[in-house]
Image (cartoon, rainbow, N blue to C red; front, side):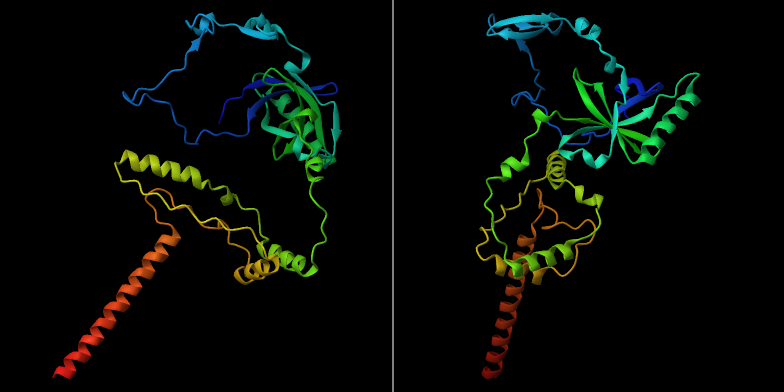
Length: 317
């Protein structure tokens, strides 16, 4: 389990509870590459260069600066920032509660696991208070809203009950969100054909199923991992052919009818359109089909030649 990166208090009116925050997401298992010197194979290191003198500057000699005018800066020391604390640096106040569906998911930014910090003598009291706040939110079917200082910014946060714990989600500022409705204004209004609509609805009904975690399979990451593994073993890398791009649909009615003929039921859990990508040293379905077809044609030609030779032999006899 990851270590908490934030410790503080969760407060509901006069009731306070020590808590920990831990990021709820991670990209630890993703393939990452380092920059190397092509000639030596050694890993490259980034250096900070003085823009005027071109001298290399050690990290200890750096300081943060805010550019208030072109080429003019006010410097700020790390300890000055550390001392700059407001109440929400250590305390998250539940300032208001609202139904969860009132908060557009576009505002949701990053989720964190919120747990009771049950250390020391007050461990039992901490868990009792934590559970009471959690169950109150759950019973009323609401989420709490407050503020927390995370990453040198005071951010609005949403707190919601989840199982035996709670989740805290940072919320984006309205200025950070592009309103989809404004983008959609440029889309022409059209009257949808009733028959086409009915076929599209039938397609959707056939594709309806349960949310399945296997859909999060990352075929690109799998291909990268296979590429790295094959290169480690010295294998020859064989790449899949670029798939043909389908042209834009001209006759939507015929395309829908063809789709209905090819889609009889909802896909099984884990099934994805197109199947697994043909990564390095794997043949695509098209290549396999072509190989099978070629083999079949060869067998057919061989059989035909054998029959012809047999007939000639009989006539000669």
